[in-house]
Amino acid sequence: MSAPQLVVHHDKELMAQAAAARLITKIVDAQAARGFASVVLTGGRNGNGLLAALSSAPARDAIDWARLDLWWGDERFLPEGHPDRNDTQAREALLDRVPLDPARVHTMPVAGGAYGADADAAAAAYAEELAAAAGPEDHGPVPRFDVLMLGVGPDTHVASLFPEYPAVRETERTVVGVHGAPKPPPTRISLTLPAIRAAREVWLLAAGEDKAKAAAIALSGAGEVQAPAAGAYGRSRTLWLLDAAAASLLPRDLYPPATS
Image 1 (cartoon, one colour):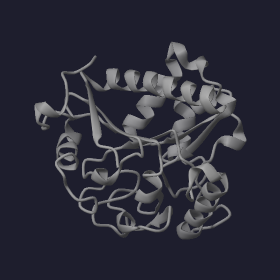
Image 2 (spheres, rainbow, N blue to C red):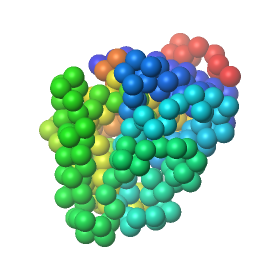
Image 3 (cartoon, helix red, strand yellow):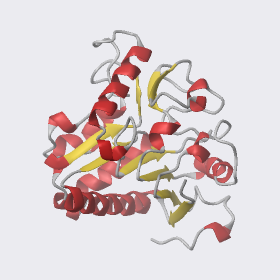
Image 4 (cartoon, rainbow, N blue to C red):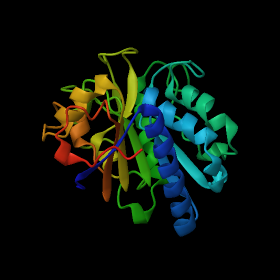
């Protein structure tokens, strides 16, 4: 378990730009070291804002996009191309504008596809895909992702792991179906905390006043069942990227002054 590090930016736009620059560096470094990089994307306004900032970043082309594996931390179990799916929004923000290898873009299954309306079967299939991509050096059932990004919800949820829900209590499976989620749509697919914790680095994104209470709770030593964001950490690094509004309820000794 890595202790969280906090970086606070003046506003959400600067946060997105700085996070995009940080991600470019991390991907380029991983590709130089191993020939490829592996990143887990997140949806929501902060995740999509980061992707949009990455799309317009001058250093974008430093990435060898054909040697980048992309995964998702969670997905709304909706038909292919639905505007509320995380992968649809990611394509609009960035993915359709860069030369990715389609075989390395690992979207979660769609509702009405091979698994029909069975989110649990779809989740099991994604778990199998992750396991097939994991090598001996990963020492587990998922790849050791270079960066796994998570948006933090106002209720402290990350991915589709909601407080007190069965999915946040999962200790064995790496991907689960989520039913009756407290925000629409009710049916989702999500990585579990064990899968999240396999990542080398976990980045938690929080911007806006509505995220301030969640950040304060998650960083105050709360339990992961009550505050799932508290249970999201990386093997070597856990990085909270916030704007000043989201950090407004945190003790000032937790972080240096806003960096940009």
